[in-house]
Length: 184
Length: 252
Image (cartoon, rainbow over the protein chains, first blue to last red):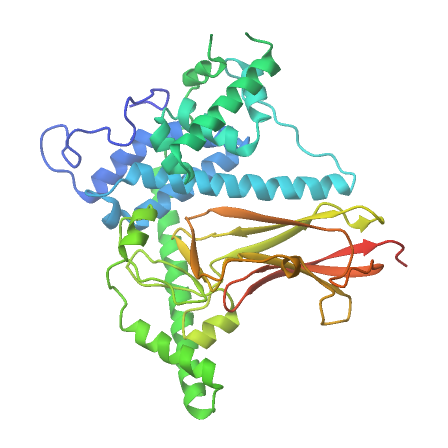
């Protein structure tokens, strides 16, 4: 699977987890490799929306997968490794973003210039710039739901909140973006 | 009505994964944990020797005993209430009352909230929860308020539980530089439920606790000069943040 594809059900993509293409059971190492290959690229894109920094996004996602590897015997084959990694990556990204915001404020107080978010050269740069200006929780909900393609319930699980909260965050984000982008 | 965000579904994926780098990083995580556990074991040994040589205050002795008893439970199943909350489907032991301890992947409760707490309870040293205090302003003219934010983060990859003896979760204190007695406490004018409770931080999760100070002391008198503000997570023993300075009125 390439990084650009959106899987219809990212939490339980395989009807028979632990079984390889040829029908032979996967070893734990093979299963981890397949898990990373399938999810890494899309999760980096998602986390990038939260952190607004490509390098940090890659670092955060790599850390989340490394932690999953350490706990792999608990996560596979009976656990929910995707949900686990989504939650760890989300929490790491939000923590990093909050720290970066505090540091940026401190730098601004010293009168130095702070970095300005520039979206990567991709489609809809105005939309990405507007999303980057959303409050962190709205942005996280948008990233998980729209970029990663998680259903509302799984987005709520990754963010550690209720599905109703996610719906509310997504509604607020949509309303704000409509105003920002001048769309009906 | 169009959903402006639908176009985000076309966002291309990021770079391909480097599984070798991820495994190498995982090995570093394991090495760090092993080193931490080794150091913790040494600390527990020192604490045990020290405890047998010194007459400890009764409450510290009780805590040490409780910690020793708890150590027999390493690997016991995680309480149902904990299982439901955490992303880690593994097992773990609940944290002792008054401390915040991560639930390890191998099922043992690890860490404590401060070095003192770690030695007092016999738990490995932490701190699993990081406290960071920030102020909305550094100077406070009369009649205005400073907004205080205490960010409490769990930097580990395991859930952390903190136990509270009452409904209050946080506090802020202000004291004049060089004086140990606080002139103001955020919680002093508030009432809280007298019920024990627990809070859980997921891996990497941060929570913000906020409050405002107008510069008046608990006695209602306005203050002036340089003051230090500290954030407190009101566990037992409490966890304290570093101090941030604020200037009330005129400061030299």
